[in-house]
Length: 227
Image (cartoon, rainbow, N blue to C red; front, side, top):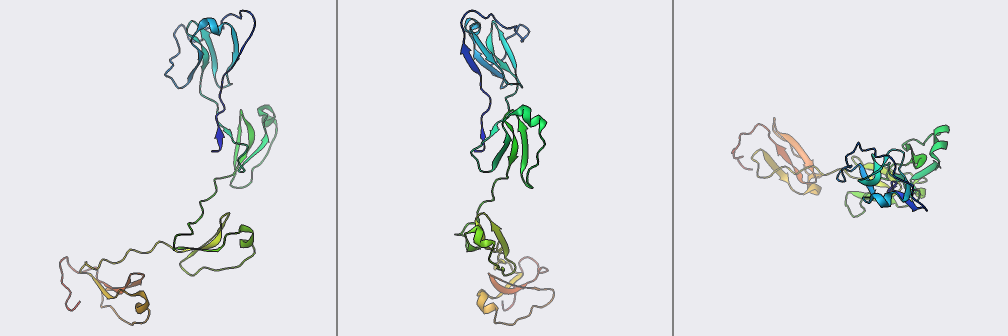
């Protein structure tokens, strides 16, 4: 996870009676079911003995209902242990004064946590168990040095996972039960050797399913003679 929860209430007991801060609720108790209402305590006597602060985005309340903060929670802090997170400063005031740029693709942030850059989530690695995926190398450094090409219509990839080729999703096989479909052969290797022609308006097909002809104009239920 890239984020830790930022908001919390800090409460510390102090000697003597501080007295309640003004009740900012206008005489009504903040609704504890409201996600923007955060009670520190429902005990007014306890609230009178403690000192606490609310985050800048929230407003303090203290009275006969208890005490706490009202307002939206501060944004979550980017996780500094994440290698994709780079803090320029942890001081929000300093962040208002400095000017910085993030590398292309990175996202800039500036909030109560500080400021800096967040790299995008890395792309998932192509599944090596997928027969459509072929790795030339799993070492990104080696991938920068090797020169390779993929056979059309394969697509080349090179990222933090390594480099190689990915074949496109196979085309769906023509439905042999469709009267408009006629298979010359179901063996792709045989299809590379045979020579056949389709009668107009039939269209020829040859793929991993086999090869043959498709007639888009045949009526439903037509029985091909000799097919």
